[in-house]
Amino acid sequence: MSFTFAHNNLNVLDMEKSINFYKEALGLSVVRNVEAADKSFRLAFLEDGKSGYQLELTWLKDKTTPYNLGDNEIHLALRSDDMKAAHELHEKMNCICYENPGMGIYFIADPDGYWIEIIPVR
Image 1 (spheres, rainbow, N blue to C red):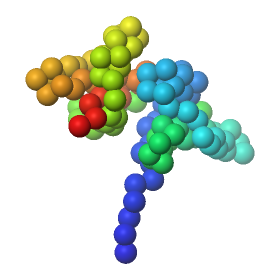
Image 2 (cartoon, rainbow, N blue to C red; image 1 turned 90 degrees about the vertical axis):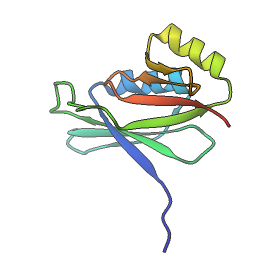
Image 3 (cartoon, helix red, strand yellow; image 1 turned 60 degrees about the horizontal axis):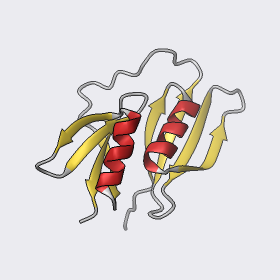
């Protein structure tokens, strides 16, 4: 028996805003959409085009207030082959929420406050 990663899910308040953020900030593209027949939820699956790994964004019709992310100790991590250019882009987007220069990493926050760690290719 073996297992492989398929996707992670993040719930979002504004699907289009989140999709645009992930496209601009990380170059992710929507590869599949799912919508409930009663329109109570929408799913968007995003990929980087290289790893096969997917990020699933879920929008719920009845959710109107921000999600409680608790201590927000859970995060996604993406590698960048150009940390300088990535940092410049994220600085311009004003989405950097934490930096650790000693480790050579930093974090960005998406529109719902989820953190994404940006790490160099090593």
